[in-house]
Image 1 (cartoon, rainbow, N blue to C red):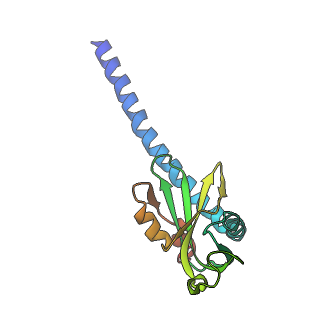
Image 2: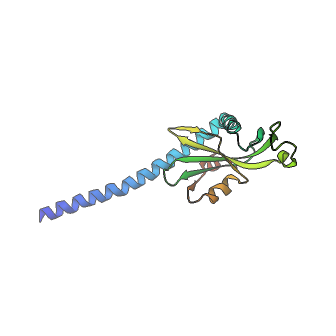
Image 3: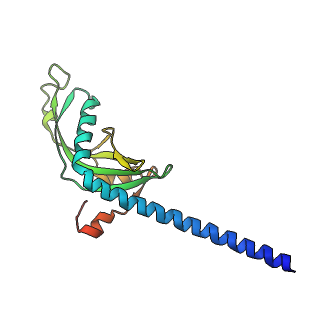
Amino acid sequence: MIWLWLILAILVVILALALSWRYLRFFGREVQAERAQELFALQRERLELKFQHAAAASGKPRGLRWKNCDWDGPVAFARERRTGQLAALAGLTIQFEAVEGGDMEGLPAVSTLRDASAVFFFHRGQWHTVGKTIFNMTPAMAIEHFKNQYEPVKNNRDHHSGDQGM
């Protein structure tokens, strides 16, 4: 009889550990997301500059040179469903100019301002970018469009500092 109680007690302890592990893991992800958002806000200007250099060096779009980026749009945070990696998408308006002697030279559409989302990713406690750009979508639209790949993360900065869009 005592063995039955002992086995039952062990099962209860295992169940309690399993349930608390899920909670602790969820809590840890929430803390990581909040810390990452704070870091993004603190490093935003540096990250924007890093993005511009990487995007300009990518050679995309072909035949166009990155002339100016206006970072007036909101920032949305997401988590990659497969890996759990955090991403930040920052809204911006991009102005291009044609590369001299290229296919795009002389086309009127070149001077059209383009709305886009700049992609940043959080890896090993730091924000990074490779200049990836999602054209013609706000950050919220991009997360919705790629909902099979990303899940939205609540922007804790909106609630703590009163900033809208950041």
